[in-house]
Image (cartoon, rainbow over all chains, first blue to last red; front, side, top):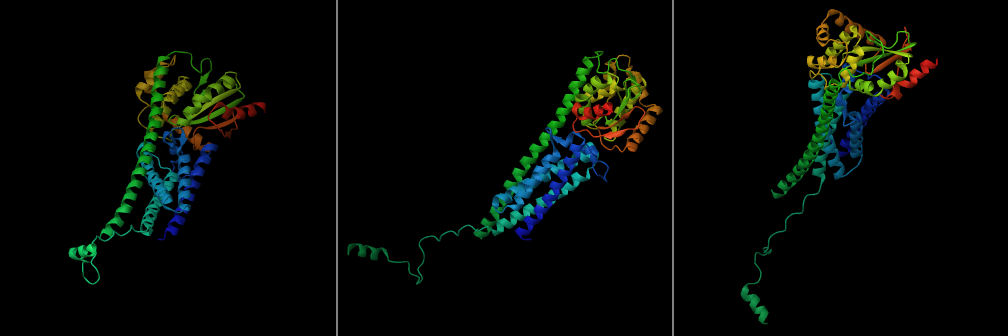
Length: 169
Length: 244
């Protein structure tokens, strides 16, 4: 998979993630009800884990996906490293939130799971991109050969006696 | 051979940097999340201690008639139905930030009656809390107990609705017998009321909390959307209804 294809796929997935985060924030701000087939979306969204020091987790998710989108659109090593760092951090935090849903709140939010799956896919792509960037990068310069170099005809150059004779001339 | 090893070392160091940075960011996020939850629990336990120490102090509902799940005069022209889960932190915030103003401006003046329709969708503690509130309703103290439970709200489903907590809250409500309240929670009529409240929420199309319905006392009611959990969120709808 070329780096160009990885970047395009990552940007598409990040856009989908941002759309999910926007939907969650919209429903939260209007006080509406989330579309939900798992039955636990509102339970999760109204739990104390839905905020992080007063900031909705959905807002953090939106910022994260926009960051991933930006990193996918930009070329270069900094963008590769940024995308990989953001995506892996999102993946680890997603695993924690999944643990909270399953074992603390005892409810599953399908939107959170979808967001986790997108983050996982972007993280895998970001690692592939990092690898692709490493292979494409120029190799370090070859080390210089040590002195003395053997001459093509096999001789080692003038002898000490020959050099002294040349100096006295 | 040297070139191959140099090539393989470079990506490995990049992976390590990325992994360490990502782990650091996620650890910060997880710690912040846990701190937020613990702060909520700490605030709740402080509130419990405060409410217990203020036993028999004049409550928010002093002088206001309570009848079952209703707060306010039965002759009030309008009724506000509050759909809430006692474990829902947003419901607790509404109770803390908006309810005192609504009570002072509309309920005490006889313009509005509020009916509590409890839900138990967050988990087992929601059910225990709701059973406690409904049992207190028969003693005409549902709103005192609901307010006390919100003030002492703990982390979801950690078993925070203990018998000790219920006894503490009851001790702060004049005329409410704590041991009688604890015994009444398991009565069959309480279970019937829990089922009825759940069916009422379903019929109203309520799936999130807090949700509100407003209308003339006796109905019909319509869902009210609130933009904020402060009094400014619900007041315009009440004012509009009262203005006719």
